Length: 88
Image 1 (tube, rainbow, N blue to C red):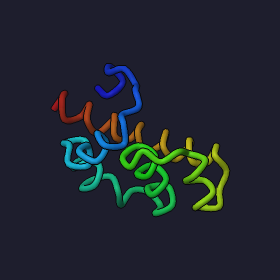
Image 2 (tube, rainbow, N blue to C red):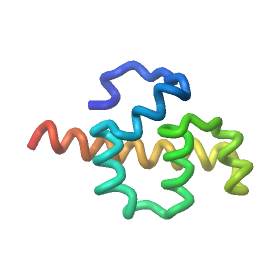
Image 3 (tube, rainbow, N blue to C red):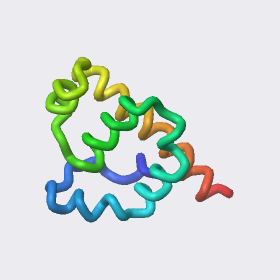
């Protein structure tokens, strides 16, 4: 479902409102516990907070690639959960 929408970066101001979106609610309630805290933290900071991957990588002491991988893993699982809701 999420892959049907074009990917675009929202301004930081718009991202703050995104924290209350249905996608964020699903992510927080059902997905957060499926990932290590560092993986979830990288995803959340990049996707929801709008922080730069390089900034998150520095803060976590990991490579930028690891941040992108974390983001990818969580988004893949989120898409799977959302597709299940639409199909079910």
